Amino acid sequence: MNWFTKTFSSTVGRKIVMSVTGLFLCSFLVVHLIGNLQLFRNDGGAAFNLYSDFMAHNGVIRFMELILVAGFLFHIYDAIVLTSRNKKARPVDYVNNHPEQNSTWSSRNMGLLGTVILVFLIIHLWNFFVPARFGGLEGVVIEDVEYDNLYLRVVQSFQIWWYVAIYVIAMVALAYHLIHGFQSAFQTLGLDHKKYTPFIQKFGVAFSIIVCLGFAIIPLYFFFLV
Amino acid sequence: MAGSNPNAKPMDITLKVWRQKDRNAIGQMVTYPLKGISPDMSFLEMLDVLNEDLLLKGEDPVAFDHDCREGICGMCSLFINGRPHGPERGTTTCQLHMRHFKDGDTITIEPWRAAAFPVHKDLVVDRSAFDRIQQAGGYVSVNTGGVPDANAIPIPKSIADKAFDAATCIGCGACVAACKNASAMLFVSAKVSQLAMLPQGKTERKTRVENMVAQMDIEGFGACTNTGACAAECPVGISLENINMLRSEFVYAKATSENV
Image (tube, rainbow over all chains, first blue to last red; front, side, top):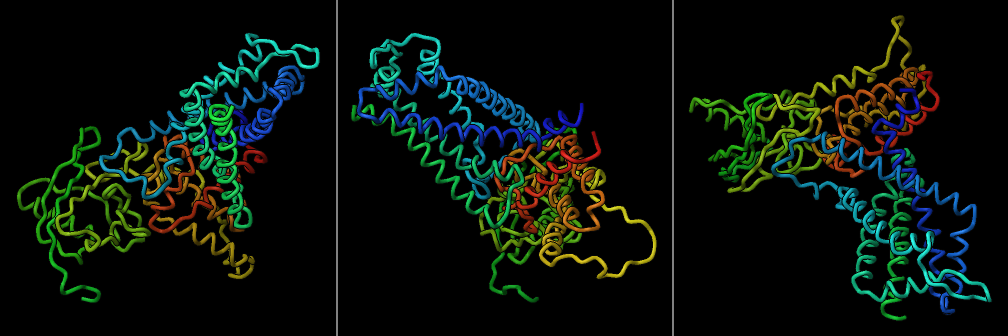
């Protein structure tokens, strides 16, 4: 192995990959949430459909989409490698163990929370991304041009109570994942100083709650108000 | 005796202790009732009482590690009631006293659990993985010669304090025992940062962190998830800051060392 593969196959190196990809995925959440705000416009979905058409056809976005997929894959792959290593590091468990007295629940359950988010992601992509990208949506005419009506799919999906429930539960899981993950990512990069670490920790909690609340409001808005 | 409480009543307690004949044997928890334990006894003295009982009965005494019994050598271990070194913060097992338990309590005692710390016998685990990590780079090479003047190399007080704090690690392995991943990051980071901060340690700075992390991985310890359990349970209060320093040392070394 050369120095590069050695670095990124060590436990410390793999965590750096987890950290960088995790923060990158956080930046994606921000972009995704801002885009989704188009759903709240009272225009029958015109702005949202134009936005989703832009996202589906713009070259830069399509390129970033590949980076995003890579980000997810590296994050998930290293999580699996590290989790299996961590399980092997303690083959015999304690009979009596009280981890709740020395660490937070979310910090100990990042894998479980991540799995919930992954299942959600697959459902979410299957329902919205796949038809938007590969066809299967009804058409809608906006200013004499026909577009895919992704807005209609959003409205229809969020009339189903259990579908709304899946989204809300997934966003709670994501919030807990980020509450630990956001500040942990900075620690993993070795960025730790009494000048800015307290800010990062507070910002991370606020970021996690605001972003996840923002996403969770969308299905609730369509279920109760539209 | 200074500090003893004449009103303290002897306690009856029930121990559930991990018994394992040797490395390859299958172990199990065995229950031992103990009567008349003084609250002024240390936890290890309580185990001494148990072992005297067992010897008198002709049974095999419980094997456990101990040496100085002053909280400085790092030999004692024991996972007591679900916590390394027991329920008190900043305390080694030898400095834990029975007054922290109540009459009628059931106390579970288990060895450190980690693949890298195989059980020798009962509560004794093999911690030589830590020695091998130290041998991989936890030292400074000092060439012989005249004794340098003590104040020839200026070191800022804040750095000296941090290095000293890291150097208080006694290598007991409670961090590994507490970590859900059985990660040795707190131990390794204390040893790395202690030397990385001081001028004498700068010479071998890059190879040290590279070799010690590599050895840590070879030994089969888990990765760090930043749960903070290690620092919360560390009997000498080694800070998580050391782990973050290890990471920046690691990145710096990997990016700039001669080791291709």
